[in-house]
Length: 288
Image (cartoon, rainbow, N blue to C red):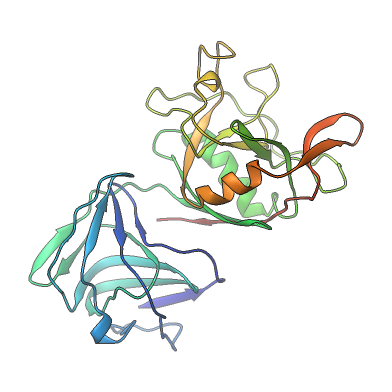
């Protein structure tokens, strides 16, 4: 088993595909960074008691108390502290109600039977801001070009230190283009073509690409919808619409808080700029 210590962030256990939540509480104790053996990740008395099948609103509870999981090429990402456990072989592991993580890949045995997750291979963007952390699923399966551009910029550290420069409550929070002093930062990769998928809509928490009147002018700036925004879809305020390429899966309350801050006009006519800068500290991409 391998562990990768990155940084302390957020909460909750997310399992992608059809979403799963695992109820959680205490702390992971892991000493070794690299190991080929199974690893106890919490005291047995706090072992997994229930799993929630989560489709954003619906859930299903497994009442039985299971003491172990058997991992088969399973990766577990815990968010407090940020650690990745990659079980390479078929290994028994102790899992608990204690912590926050995201289960990715294939299958594992729960108690006496095997659980197969319907999964996708979408990455998660962990966006740390001065007002909190957002976890954003990136729809790589449906928006490959737009997500690839965002991921490349994030991996480069392009967004680190930039601000949310346009904040409008009940509309969008927009960032990814300006430093706190109002200086524009230009993407080294240039504009990308507009990408639209009929199954992706501008719902509450959707992340999209900002652009000019030219539909193929998006570069680095993105926005997050504060509430559903059907006018941003094709045929809304413009015939082409705006590329939606992911959605906040944890931290919508941070979006709400940002959207409600006091704004002003700054730097020669930039409206809706927060009075106190809201800085994107960094964006880390967690790949499945």
